[in-house]
Length: 210
Length: 210
DNA sequence: GCATGTTGTAAACATCTGCTGACTTGGCGA
DNA sequence: TCGCCAAGTCAGCAGATGTTTACAACATGC
Image 1: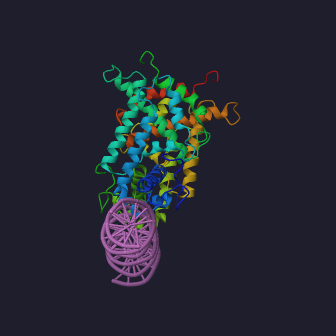
Image 2 (image 1 turned 180 degrees about the vertical axis):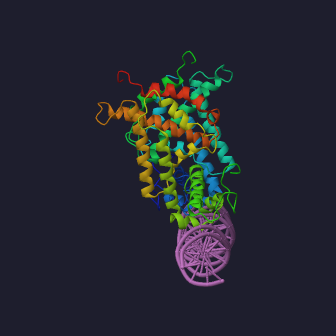
Image 3 (image 1 turned 120 degrees about the vertical axis):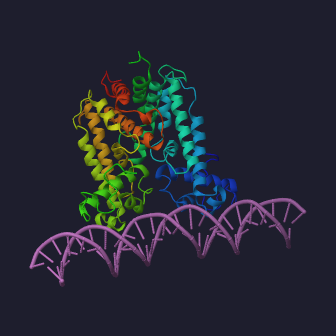
């Protein structure tokens, strides 16, 4: 969120400039990220996005070349935000609360839905590469917290488990937005920390390897 | 595509009747389930489905009224199959292998992708209700295995954990088809059983509650 | 053989969708 | 004040998409 709460601009509001390229560009980005995350790429039309942003459709092509260009811009924006939101060198001890914190706020239209963008494919090759790389990078962070490193004797086993833990995160976000499953959908950070603690302990905590 | 499989009926094959309503209906159902699961509802066109089934587009409307009708038919079919595939009264001990078995075979186009149908929304109210109910039912099976029952003192806590376990399953399937993340995507039943064992133990095994 | 209902085909329809090009409007410096 | 250019609007095109309609091919009962 760049400014205070830049959404809902239909026409000239109080401190809003009426013609602001960077501003409307951001409006489009915000609306698109919400839409793409909830409805997927093909489920979202450029007119939907423009309407939600309160902006003319043609400006999408002007600022982002195409719908795919806009999607890719959304993706890199979300990736950037998410990357900064989670410590690349998390420890196993702090992992549960980190995951819980990221997942919370996903009641209906929270920011963490941006995680969903990583699961939404546009069919575009370049965007898909970004998606894949990002997911891979997150899995590696989890694995590293569990003691994984490139030459680890049990590297594959650890990485698999880290990816399963990551899958849990994605699954939770997805269930929350796709079905309104309770009590999962209403669970807040504090409700999630406990289960996540036990999940991390069971899945990633090192014991005598099997 | 589908060379080995029994589909691809274009004209009179060996034991294939040339005009078989029930047969082409099934061809459409199979093709649609594959497509809807992998590409989502809006990402799939009726012409895609018809082509993959080797059948004329108009027959979709004839046999299923509409695209949404076809989607709903796919959903009830998948729900029926999946419901029969997993024991409603699983024990906690057998849960890990059950989950692993269901998840395996999801390399690229396996049957378990049908799980994905439960996460694909068509926007149709009735279809969404089916999805929600089915997911809820599966969560309840997991919860029951963990000792949950309607009047349990810690009912919510247990149900939340069961739903998180279910989310893990969905997340794994999704990561496998959406990103080709390795080693998760190539992991077979035997690779998954171990992690699932530890996950179930950590997440659902009863201890002194908290 | 012929009439009849079923199965499959082809074309067209109305609408939606992404995108473009010509145009208008607003802000700003000279 | 005026001219200029960026920012925004509008209408429309070309193709895709879900659906319908009219028609042909086939199988079956008489």
